[in-house]
Every structure is written in structure tokens, then in C-alpha cells.
Image (cartoon, rainbow, N blue to C red; front, side, top):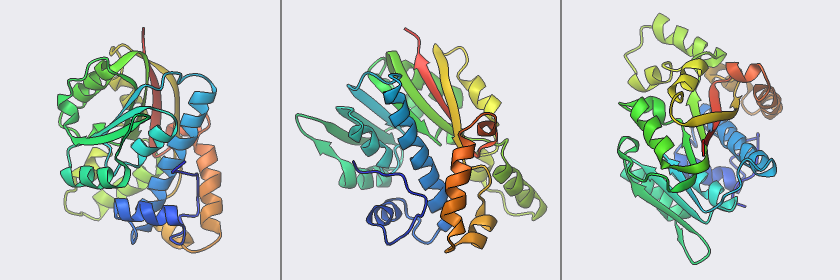
Amino acid sequence: MFYRVDFRCDDRDPLQRQLDDLYGYRDDLETRILHRLRLNLFFLLMRELIAARVVTQFGSALDIGCNAGAYSKILSDFGFRSVEGIDIDAGQIAKADAAFGVESDERTIEFRVANAEELDRAGQFDFVLCTEVIEHTARPPRVVENLAAALAPGGIAVVTMPNAFSLPYAIARASYHLRGKPRDPVFEDHLKYPFWQALRLFEGRGLEVVSTTGTNLCFDARLIGALARTPLLPALSRAQFALARRWPLKYAAMFFCMVLRHRD
């Protein structure tokens, strides 16, 4: 198994060094920790969905907005025989292919440049992953429509989106406006979808919500900086990770995660 859950984010760890190199956050502790929380969440969620027999078909999986490919590799390690990762960034696709591309009789992991707004692979995938992508697209409803269409009957999708209804984003929003910083369209994309708006995006698409969860209740740049290189950082990270997965705190998590099933 390529991935393992970890809250230390120690750059002496070979896995962490690999992630640092792939995602370019070796010198960005905040991004490193927040990304590792999301990876931890997805890994544990997949394990739980398989154990609960929510995920039962392992023929094909699609990773929309695959970036450098770590999630695609995790899907393959969980047993999907064919995994396809797509992204609009050719540089990220090249990284993903070099790190994780596989073609054999037992399994394939392939990556290609594609736009989530222009998918045409109707009904082909047992599983679709889309993490932190929809909010950055020009036509989010079109992406959701394409995602739903890509799922085979009974297929499962896992979608994560930034949750504007969270303490970290509330603090970041206040700082952004009070300091009069230059406009940052990427950051503004993160403020478009409180969790209830994210759920509404999927209404009327032939999908039912199986479960929801989330990660990161309180970490932001200031808190991470204050705790950096202390034993408190991994301990607090682990504790708030566990709390963020529970009702009702999951609705206040920085990253909101939805598990959806294509109705037969």
C-alpha cells in the first residue's frame, strides 16, 4: 500500500518527502498539513466504505482533477483494476504518470489531460472521485452533471469541496478583506460554497447522499506556525481530525466531503 495515515508530516519520512516533491509544498507547512489531513480522510473513508459494503464494484475508477496522482494511486491500491486520472494541467499529468502510471494485465493507472466540463464517458465508472475541483471551474453545475453521468448505475462518488462555513475560512475571509489584499480569485473560489450550497449542487442529478464527513476544524497558517516543530502539532492534528468527522462538527470543517450513490 502506497499510503498510510500520518499526522506528523515529518520530512524525514520517505512518504512525506515523496508527497512534498509531487505537490511542491516542502517549504509550505500549512499546505502540507492540510493536504495530509485530506489524504488521511480519503484513505480512512475508503477503508470504511469498503468494510460497510458501500463500495462493492472495483472495475473502474475516475479521479477528476487528479493533480499529481496520489489519490489515483490510493484507489488502485484499494483494488480498482482500472484507474483513470484527468486534469487540465499537463505538467501535473506528467508528474502523475511518472510517479504512478501503470499498465499491466492485472491493473492500469493512466493519466490524461482533460477538462471536467467536457467529459463524455457516460456510465463507465464504478467509482468517481472529485476533490477540491468543482469550485474552481467556470461551470460547476456542468461538472456535477458530467460526474453523475460518468457513474455506472449503483456507482459511488466521493466529492470534497471547501466549506465557507468554517472557522479557518471565516478567519481567512476577515483577514483578506480587512487587510485590503490584492484580489485572489482562487481564494475567492473557496468562499463560494458553504456545506449546504455544496449539497444543493447535487440535487436532481440522480444521486443520493450516502454520508457526509469533513476535516480540519481549526488549523490555519497562524496556529500551524505557532505549533510548528512542537509535539503539540501532531497531537492536536489527530484530535481535531477525529472531531471533524463527527456530527455536527463535520458541518463546520474546512473541507466538506460527500459520499453519493448513483440511483439504479
